[in-house]
Image (tube, rainbow, N blue to C red):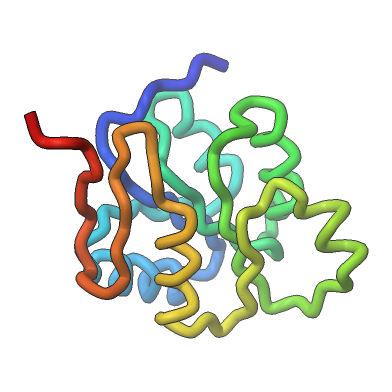
Length: 146
């Protein structure tokens, strides 16, 4: 699979529950972030042929393809793509370490807005040196001025 380079900083939201997808998109966009939603892991993985997000918000418990399967696939095709896991499951430490090693953060649903923004701030540094500042709710550039 040929992956495209980032042309902009955006976040992929992958969740099979429409209400959660809509709420996350609204929250991220209200903070000045570009975000796109995917109803399934397969739909997201198929989209990687043409565009690559700066980061992924991924639900673990989905009908067609679990978040665990998405992470396993990403480890093979794009192991540098940061993943933030959102789950309603109570995961044991052993399971977290074994199956979610690729995840940058594991956030429990319902996720607190500030907790989500803090995890994004820690994760969202892309190849263009854009950083999400949760205090200003803006994406800014760390590149030196010329």
